[in-house]
Length: 124
Image 1 (cartoon, rainbow, N blue to C red):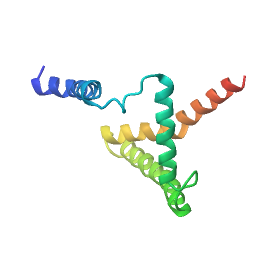
Image 2 (image 1 turned 45 degrees about the vertical axis):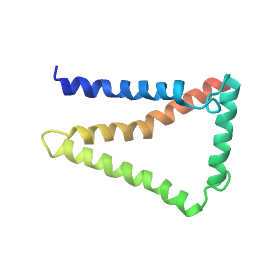
Image 3 (image 1 turned 135 degrees about the vertical axis):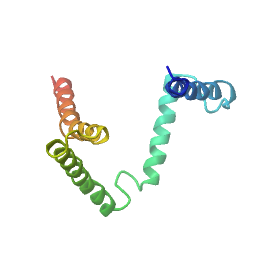
Image 4 (image 1 turned 90 degrees about the vertical axis):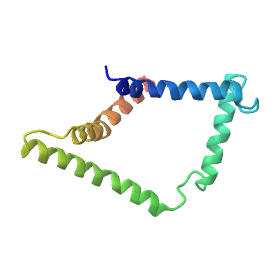
């Protein structure tokens, strides 16, 4: 195995170990929650702070939310169109396009299906 490949494979592990070491030994005591309830309280406070920065429960501007929501189907159509073009015309589909197409397909079908299945299990 190439040493650079092994290093690249172990890099995320080193980053997480560094984060853990910093949080364990260098972080001040006020950052470390002592119990699970304190951790939930810190997360709730962080969520409230985020909502206040966003202007409450609503998006800060309605047109920003509308543009963001309208970009999703356009992006999905472009990615699926690129995949269909490459599958039909070119001898081989690019790996990047195939990965993006699978992510879009999961977004369109898998995530929604999983959401409805989990909701039905909770209601039963």
